[in-house]
Image (tube, rainbow, N blue to C red):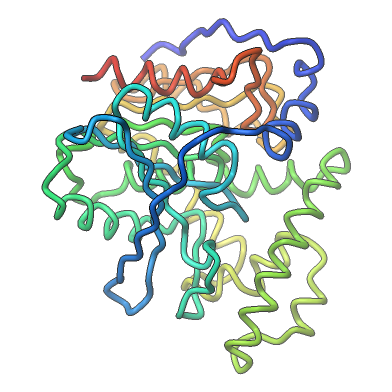
Length: 321
C-alpha cells in the first residue's frame, strides 16, 4: 500500500514533541462513563483484568480491543480517549490490563512484555465465547502496538471476526527504540519509566523473594538493565538482546494479512529509524503507514476533545465495515 498522507497540524505549542507527549499523557482529561471490570482466568493459572466501556447500542456487534503501553493501564487518557470515540460510533470497547497492570499484582512470577501475544489469543477466546461480536477492531499503543503487530504477523490461527488493526507510536524495532529512549534528550522519560518499573518489581520481589532480589533491582540503572534482570529471564529469553530480537514487531510485519494502519510521528523521540517501515508498507497489501511531522509519542493533540490519531483510527475501521 502507498504510504498514507495525513493533514495533521497541531495547535501552537503542540508542534513541540515534548509538549504534545507530556500533555497527552498527564494533563489531558477524558470524560467517559466508568469502566465495568471483568476478570478472566488464564490457562496457566493467572488472570487478566478487563475494563469494558459500552456504547449506547445494547445490541452492538462491533468491538474495539485496546492495548496500553509500557507501565500503563486502562485508566490512561489515551485509552479512554480511544474508547470514547468508538463508543460514540456504536462500538463497544474492551480495554485490556496486561498481567500485573491493574490494581492487583498477578499471581505468577512472569507478567507482560512487548511480545506477549499468547495472552491476546486467550483474550480472543473469551470474547468470542460471548457470541455477540461479529466485527472486532484492535488498537495498540506503543508497547501494546508492538505486541499487536507481532500477534498479527505470527504464524497462528486468528479469529475471522478481526477486521483490522491500528498501531499508535509503535516501537517496532525494540532495540533501536531503547537506544532512542536512552539518549540524553529523553533522560526524564527514561528515568520515569525506570522508577515505575522498579516500584513494580519491588512488589514482585516481595512475593517471589527466591526469584528476585530487591538489591538486584536497586542496582539497575537503565531500562535495559531491567530487561536483562527480569523481563527477558522471566519470559524465557536469554537476555535483553535476545528478548528485543525475538519480540520486535519489525520481524513480523510482512506476515500481516489483515488491514493494518500504523501511525508514527516523525518527531517521536522514542522511535528509531527502523520504526518507520516505509518499504514494507509500500510493498504490502495490508500494512498502511502514516508518518505525520508532529505528534510526539501518542501525543496527537488537536483543538477538540477528539485527538488526530483517534479520528484516524476510527475512520480506518469504519472504512472496513
